[in-house]
Length: 399
Image (tube, rainbow, N blue to C red; front, top):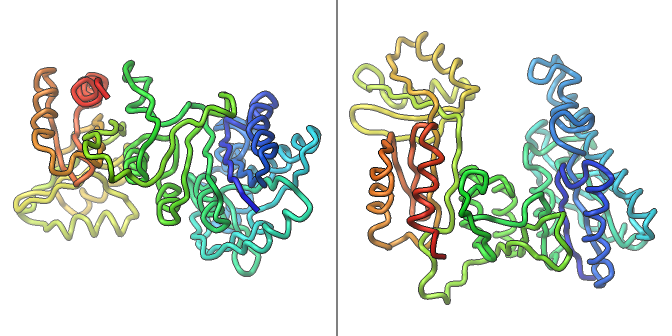
């Protein structure tokens, strides 16, 4: 039994036209002799009646009086509807398909409702279902506890479901279908010269995804990497022969691997700078952690700490710091630019090129830090477009 896993996101199943475009990819794989596990997200995006955010809106969203267990009951409905609708279409088109919930597919989780962790996949249930079907349409994003209570596994959960099933079933490949043709060197909405990447390593695409590229969830990439399952990021709207971007192990045999793979960004950040004369870094970060605030882009030095928060958390952080009598300087409307590339390690001159490119465009660097695969730069959001285009020109114009 050779299995292919294909994941279709909300825009790929949002209407009949989209679902028929997705169907072509499923039929192509069936005709090639694969048994196919299709993982589907809820139909459409925010505003669509069965999208996750729309379902949450029925019960007042974050202000809901429902418990997390009860919230999982309602938000999981979107994927269940999507699986049944797509399975119906496949059967109408002569493809023998069956719809499965996460529990039907053997996805067992802990009981951390709204953000459950998958603890086991009972593959026997999948193999048994394949005795009577060529295609199994599985709900993404959801599973069940050992007691049979429905759970959801957090945002990006359909990508994660696909990767977990691909790993557990030793699939030949996991295909993530979206509305773009694959991984790009930058967001083409900002960078007109952004280029298509035919191949990218697990590590690089995970870093790009963590830093704002939205084509695949980073957790899904990490799972695929651990199992060495190849992933392709593909467009639902292109033909089945167009294979998009291959995500796999880095080719260590290439002597001159590109230094920079891509440039990602995150907007809507606010920078907090706190002098540690009267309060330690531990005081500050314990205060944030105790209030469930996730800080980003952190610099700690003997005299001060700097961190960033997304705009939704800014007012809460201001109030907490004021109540704790911690003085803070705040700079709103910032953006984080991430220069990602496994080939930067040991390559001289990368930082010099970054600083020069931004200086030549009169862009102030507000903050910076780095790892061996990524260099992060904080700039004013008004400078974002100029910054990413300048950096793309320096590092990626000739790849």
